[in-house]
View 1 (tube, rainbow, N blue to C red):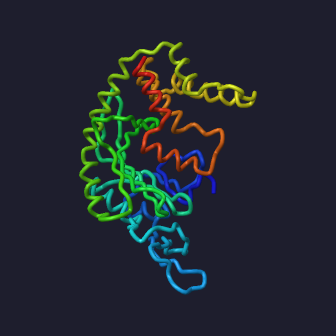
View 2: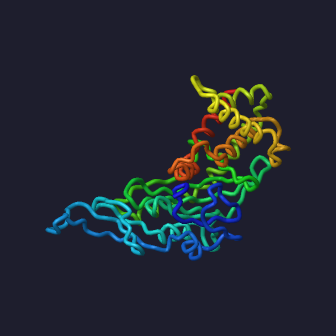
View 3: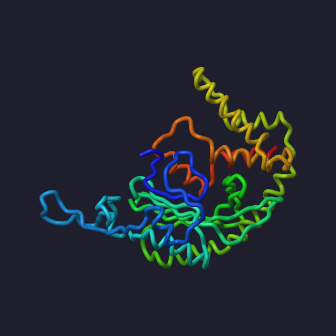
Amino acid sequence: MAANVESMFYVREKPWHGLGTMVAEAPDSAAALRLAGLDWNVVQKDIMTVDGSGAIPGFKANVRDTDGSVLGIVTDRYRVVQNAEAFSFTDELLGEGVRYETAGSLQGGRRTWVLARLPHQYIINGEEITPYLAFINAHDGSGAIKAAVTPIRVVCQNTLNLALSTAKRSWSFNHTGDISGKLDEARDTLLYAGQYMAELGKTFGKLGQIKLSDGKVTEFISALIPDGDGTSPQQRRNIRRMQEDMRARYYDAPDLADVGKNGYRFINAVSDFATHAKPLRERANYRETLFARTVDGNPLIDRAYQMVMAA
């Protein structure tokens, strides 16, 4: 399946792969669950031997109740977190009136995500920043549950996650033990999202004070997207195209026209490129990897940040 997306909905802006259902306004949790195609449950069943002589001890099969799809084989210590529980977690954390921007299913239901808009907006470095809450779950036993706050610029919808050691914005826990207690701990941590936004504002202020010459911008872009040795003519053309794409996002983006030639503008351009540029090769797991990096931080953005701060 293209982009590894089984089902999803999105608000207003169509993703590059063109999949999913577009809605005009962000829905509440009940509608979001249905629009995202997540209105199903995971049931755990015994795994039987081929000859039917008995169940294999210590393991269960996670099965989708609507079509009998086996989502994964897990140990009997694995605790299921249903899709509806992800929305319930977000509803309780953000309060009445929460609206969802996107949600969906990847890899045939083995991985799911929810992205909700936080009720408060911030003006940082003269720009309107809207924090979002992301909730990612794996029903196949391949990964932990993760909840995180991610700040998104309202104009371009760029993801601007940076490694801020002084402010927690994410929580990760395994599908074992007391899940309800772990969810309570995650709520307590994420309630301090305002601290993260305050630290982010300080970082943006520092980036805005770092002036960049045109030569330095070219140097940074070449370092982020290097030509490489032994590349073919076609590969070199592709690299040049990507470099020009990033350069255009720095110089020509209308929402950055009044920002000035500085580190803040460059990080925004790199962020726009990293989260919106269509890949040269659309591998099966590209969209899943991109979404994970939206929460965990994109290494291209992290490297650009380090270069600018060292300039």
